[in-house]
Image (cartoon, rainbow, N blue to C red; front, side, top):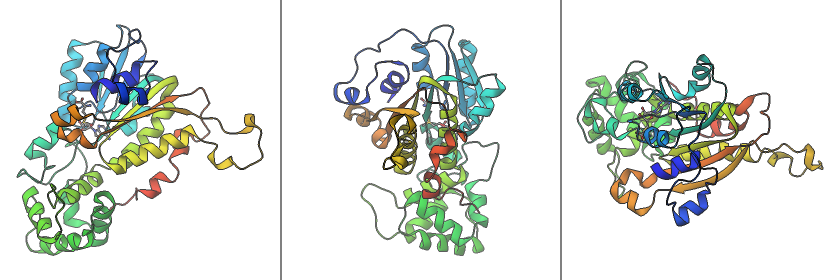
Length: 344
Ligand SMILES: C[S@@+](CC[C@H](N)C(=O)[O-])C[C@H]1O[C@@H](n2cnc3c(N)ncnc32)[C@H](O)[C@@H]1O
């Protein structure tokens, strides 16, 4: 998703449908100036590719909540003066950018979810395949670990989280088993949780560990991933200059649905008034224009199986002024639908 994402952000002629059908040989258009945001630096694959398409006067502000990602970002910033690094959740991007005197940007990338280095490092606690402490925080400097949450959450809250964020049929049985186990010996490692869940989930989905859904759910909860994404979408709409692009890559259907609904709502704000007898000039005008949806092609999924579920959605800001409540106006319905706000 590297090449199409950078093209989606910087190529004025980018057309998602055409790209998915024909691919793109060379990026078109002049190097871009202006201010750009990578909300999810990771190890900087996208940032580096984006910098190649930006001119010498451009600025790239990169965010990550993971201290190791931020370390990697500082290494890049040391060799490229266009880069500014912020250790912050991307939901806070509007405030953080305001602190730098920036109120408008020319493109925003969000490549959400966990990174390969996070999953592959057993000590981070994201993987049921690797022994490690049950941490799961992307930002290891703040917040509650998965083990801390599981030690004190009610059965109802655990069931709710595992069901909603893992779409797990056995959520109640898993929550009860966790509550029973913690009174005897506690649950502090990844393998303890993985084995406990495997003992409760009776049906096995082909090619999937029985604890996959539970780990995903707890990770999403601990990191408030859907709340973060929803706030970042609203902030992005507030920040994008006319014709600036927003590119979001998501890895599971809960995230993708949130992005799709938000973009659709901002692209079609008049949906509620469609049946009202209004003149065209009186109807709410689009704030975003949809520029396409892409999925990874066969060669990419062969090289990186994790790309299998990746979806890139792209939208371009129009010149329509923001409503009084800003980008948050287009989240209505989405936050409720995903149970955002479930907390112990
Ligand atoms: C899929 S990786 C991004 C990979 C990156 N595009 C690259 O090329 O290396 C996701 C990254 O986003 C970070 N992240 C996830 N949610 C975040 C949030 N709410 N705020 C800031 N960073 C976040 C994670 O720590 C992780 O490093």
